[in-house]
Length: 427
Image 1: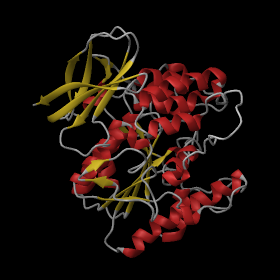
Image 2: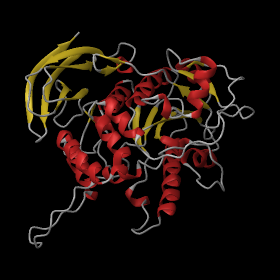
Image 3: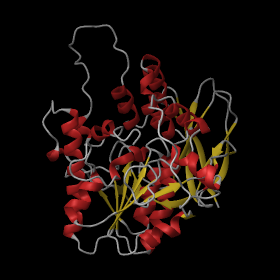
Image 4: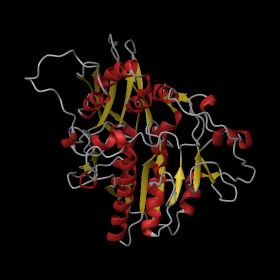
């Protein structure tokens, strides 16, 4: 269940800007400048200063290499997936000692079609992501559209702002920055997932622990985890109770969807929701079946799948049959993703079945790195970019992946200056 607690850091970011980090008062006596913190980075990112945030995070990681896991999330926001994957691989994780699972009885099936069939008659489908892996959001985008056609009505995401302090999650159909839609929705694929879910007719809902559900300061971490999982389950239950016709696609982080049982060392959201509602959610894992940036870091499940079937050309699912368990946490299905390849400096999955198309942007070389961004023309100020990519100091062109439409292009410098690059239309 690798890394499933990571998103706790982001809860405060989206609990309303009222929980912004404190800063020294002007009258405070001069002190030695403190080393930058992850809170400082988060403040810059929420202020739409992602390029300066990355520069600052490099200082954070230099002082604390263990921060690389969180660094992977910020680099994924920038479109630099290769660096995000490399940073994620630096984390210290236990080497599995058990043998790979036996997949001799497994029958891989095309992922979307199999999930839609398995969702028949269910009110809740839960799918997870690693917070540094936009490819998981790209897959959920495809699933979201397919389940909408199958009658699903609500799209709930762990990252969405949750509570009475939140405004609309979309403004004129656009996902918004500064935590207004969410924290991880600052990443363009996730932002567009929210945008397109709204356009498809879903009602977007947040279910994360809300300010009034928060325990008092000083609560032990273990107790906080317990309360958070329970609050998430209660919030989805309230939605289901309020609308008997609601069918909900829930997008969670890491292992929160695990169908644990009362008395488990970690009794998680998925298991609690099942107990509270009597509904058996369809639970789908993407973590264990995603190849890493080098095969050395692949999971036992992925290694076993490749040994049995080879790497898939497109996402497939395999069932976690209780009689033939896959040695993953308690879920119904595992998605097995293809190996990622780069095309024009961007990952191949970002084409998203030709939804996004490559558009080359010519650049004047700068003496430092910058972030090239494409915003949907006509969306409100502060909306999330449709795509963005970190480029080096001497780069003269970059490929953005954009759906058909009109965009305004911006280049953000390391100092946070936003340089206009004109407008472009993609057919």
